[in-house]
Amino acid sequence: MKLEISGFVLALAASVMLPGCANVGPNPYGGQTYTGSGTRNMQQVYFGTVVGLAAARIVPGQNEQFLSTGIGAVAGGIAGSAAGGGKGQELTTLAGAVLGGLAGNAIGKTAGTAQGVTITVRLEDGRTVAITQGVDPNVLFRVGQKVEVLEEAGGHARVVPAAGG
Image (cartoon, rainbow, N blue to C red; front, side, top):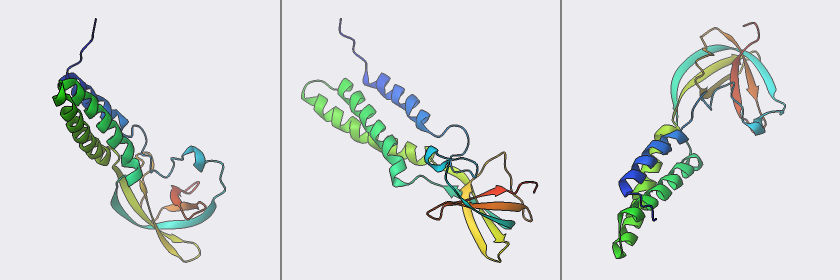
């Protein structure tokens, strides 16, 4: 018994599965979110006061979009191959892969977008720095708030509320 799946069913399955590649859970760019490689590293700590806040939008970089484009191309190619027959099958496979890749890329751009905030901090040493990071709904900053700026090797930094502040 040969099982045939229509191109429509595969396209429908892809449209349901691809959004699942989106970030789920806490904002991955938030001040209290670490990757595995970001743990157990020493950080320089600076103390300061928030002097400004501005909304920002964080969009995925090129490397972050690669996966969704590839998944879309594979899903589209499979759907296209199921839709065509004979010599037409090669064309529908190619068209499905191209259209799937374009759709995956578009999904990747919007799925990886996150709300951000640019936090301007006057450090105790007199310098003023601005750091953009993802919004964490459990950590809301306000002007005048005491904070810690945690700087990692390579210049990456995050802002977290100061202990007791």
